Image (cartoon, rainbow, N blue to C red):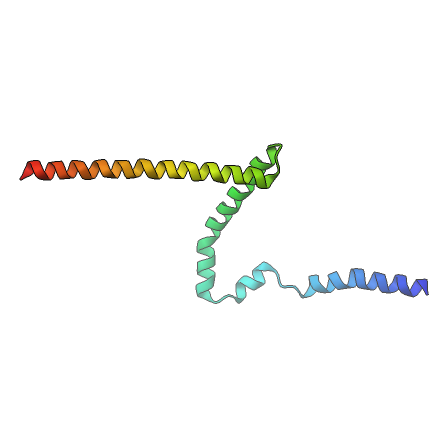
Length: 111
């Protein structure tokens, strides 16, 4: 009885993954099944996706260097980025307002 159980365990634990490996298509086979428009679109976006993934991994490495959990470090970095973005938007809005006032002055002086 133990021999049957060991044989069944061996067949199921090695045979199942082997069948999945045999029948699962590779990425190249899936790519070949795309229609030509999707292939072009996928190739065009590939570099951007790879760059996004690389940025994500480098940020994770930075977060893991701190002694805090990654999710806290990520939240802190996101808040800092949001604050910097808000400051940048305020600076741009002030610059745009200055340009508008300058254009108005030139228009008034030019008439």
